[in-house]
Length: 243
Image (cartoon, rainbow, N blue to C red; front, side, top):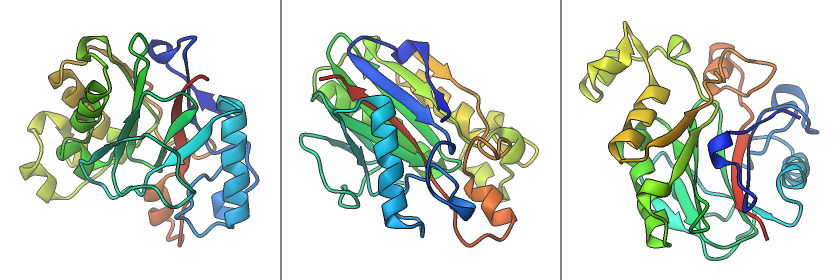
């Protein structure tokens, strides 16, 4: 099982991990640690995979994932929900131990946040629409609403598609600063990092792991599309306050 971590988020109070695609039970194009209930994978396999993530992260935790819609919306999590019944949003925050905030991705940017002193954590799913719509700003605001302080928040940007593999159409040019382009290739990870910096979050780690290029390690929507595959798996990134 591949699990990447960021030293900035490491704390006795907090467990986190950016999980790759290995170490699960799914088969075929979903092999093997597919954690996405919205995929066409066998539901029992997705449930088994998510249990393995919990066991690796914090065995007594409840793994929660949102109904992600590429928005700028964030929610405060005050209780667990059943699989597939999460709110329609793309970021969340909590100050309750045992609730693992999980973000599902397959090229988009997962961002995990913590204020260890306040005991507040957050997570965000930043595709280009969500990033542009301020999903990371809303995640930070949700954390502040639970007692976090912006100057103490640490953030880590997990595996996502790299600029070299993210070719976009000309319509992107009108939406984003030109500094994030090299030819027709857009630096989504860099843009998310810049949004965090603009929000005055100074402690930011970029793992710089490309989901498209590292096929053995990560699922990739764009790679699956290029191969004309009819579906794709989702890896999970999660953070939890220990009980």
